[in-house]
Image (cartoon, rainbow, N blue to C red; front, side, top):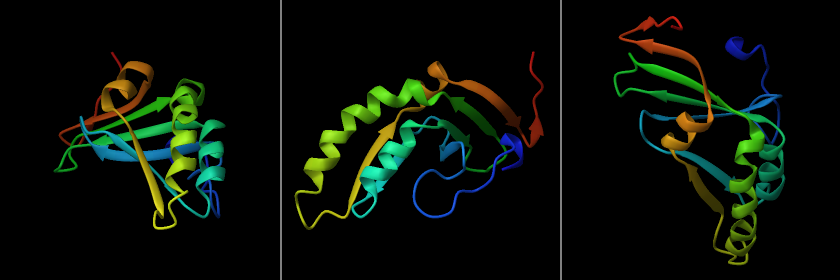
Length: 124
């Protein structure tokens, strides 16, 4: 990803070498999904990187890119861990989903980029 000067990670784990990336429509929550076969290692990997949240308008003309330090999400990940383990006690469960709210992202993150009506908005 050019904006972060980072590259994709192959296999399971975070999306990029140093970041996990999540997308959602503006003001919606960002979903984390953990699959049964690699959920525990994915959750641990998510603790070790920063997180990029991309919020976009339904028309894609407005975009916000936020960075949240991984350490600020560790309490959520630690809270999810026993829930994830319990979820997989049921052999029918293949996925575990949890969300981070848009309000958490904007209160804890740094806005890296804003696009309004298709134009980049400069920092003020």
